[in-house]
Length: 272
Image (tube, rainbow, N blue to C red; front, side, top):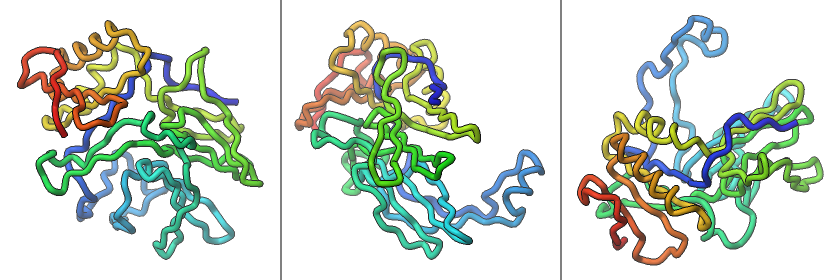
C-alpha cells in the first residue's frame, strides 16, 4: 500500500541555494533537547562528529542491520548514486543511477549551487538528478524516492528494480522526496508539489533568516504561462527577491530574474 501525504499541485520544481557551502564545524553541544525523553534515544553526552565529507548533496541515510553490525546507505543527489558506508567510515558506491535512470539527464532535475557567488572561483552548480529518501520494507528490500525519476522504486532481492508508483490521481509525481515504511508495510511518501496559496508563505519562512538565498524555478514545458506568472508574483509578494529561472537548453544564456534590482517580473537574460 502506498499513501501520498501531499496534495497534487502544479508541476513546478523549486530549488533553494544554500546560504553557505561545505560542512560546518561540529558545535560543542549540538543536541538541543526539547523533551527529556530524547535521552532514551540519544545519550545526554552525545557529540556531533564529522564522519566523512567530499560528497555532492547527501540525503536519505538509513541503517541496514547485518548481524551485530551493519552499514549505512545514503543518496548523493547530483552524483546520482547511493553510497554504502561501513562502521569504519569507509564509503563505496552501492548503486549507480539511483534516481533518474535514462541517458537524457539534461532534461530533468533542477540546478543547485554551493551557495557561493557566481564570481567566486569556488562557485559550483550541479543538476539534482539522483535519488533522495531511502527506506527498508518489512522484507529488508530497499525503497527509493527517486526524486528526478519522479517515482517510488523497490529493489528486489535479485537486484531487479520495480516501480511501485509514479503518479497520483492521474498526474505524475513532481519529485519524490521522503519515504517511510510503517510496521504494517504501508509506504508513505512526500512529493514536492504544493498548493499555490501555500507556496509563497512556505518559502518565505524557509528564507526568513537567509536574505541572500536564491529561489530557482523550473517549469514543465506544458505549463500555462499564466500559472508561471502567478508563481513569480506569489514569490515576490512574500518578499522573495532573488529568483532564477532555469530552462532546459543548458546554453550560456539562462533567463534569470532579480526582482529587487529590476523592479518588475520580466525575466532578464543573464550570462553565466
